[in-house]
Structure formats: structure tokens, C-alpha cells
Length: 203
Image (spheres, rainbow, N blue to C red):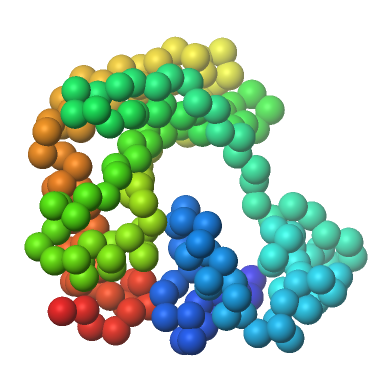
């Protein structure tokens, strides 16, 4: 299965695409990456039983025939929206899902979309680079979780995790300089580790 995952990864990020296919990026960039996928590969996606068909549809084979779900579907619920002092809009999302019949993985996800502004960067080239890779806005995401929580305690644990976040992180996100620092940190990561984004060395 690991070999199939690597195969799919190489297909979704062909050298001709120039930029890696990254979930969460803008629809235009995703479409550009998909357009570079060879037609022969796309045909395998629609051919039931082929390795790429199983991967593309989130399925894996069983020894006795048939197929089963390979990925767990997690339903995201927006629990709360908070307008920060720096005018950013923070979303609190519930990413919890059952682990067993009587236990749950409780997960609180914080998402803050940060709009890009040219004044955050030293050059228009840096602005364009970040926008091409991450899209606009760039999402700041933070997840706090606890596994194997008894179902009866799920609500209490979720509230505790959310309260811890508000006490520890909320003040940092509300600072006026947070948006600029965050998007510049994304640029710094691209320049430091361009291979993570399927790019050559970036000046």
C-alpha cells in the first residue's frame, strides 16, 4: 500500500506541473496540477479493479475479494466563529470521530484564514510565490486532540481542549503583527525546504 501511495503522489505531482498538488490549495492551482496528469493515468482512475482506481476512490483490496473503505471519513462541524482584534475570523471546528463502540477521538481544530497583502513581503515575486503555493487566503491551522475518550466524557473533553486553546493561543493570534509574521514564515519554509513543494532552489 505504501508503494501505491508513493505512485499516486508521483502521478499527482508530475515534473511538468512545476508545483506540487497540495490539499487545501486554491481551486485554480489544483486544476492546473490535475491538467498535467497524463490521460493514460486518468483512464486507470475509471477502470474498476486497477491499483489507481482503489487509491483514487479511497479504497483498498481484501484478500477474499471485494473492497473496503481505506480512509475514515471525518465530518467537520463549525462550532464557533470568533472575530479577532486584528479583524481575522477564527473558526472552531469539531473533528472528533468514533474510535470504538464506546470511545471517541476528540479533536478541536482552529482555522484562521489569513489574507495575503503585498506589504507583507519584500518583493512582488515573494508575494506571487506564496500565493501560487498556498493560495489566498493562507490558512493557519492548529489541532488539539485526545484519543480514546469515553463517549460520556466527549463533551467535557472538547470544552476543556477549547478552553485551553483560548487561554494559551488566542492572545497570540489577535496580535496586529500576526498575519504578516505567519505568511512570512510560510515563505521562509518554502525557501528553506523547496523540495517539500517540488520546487528547485528558491532565492
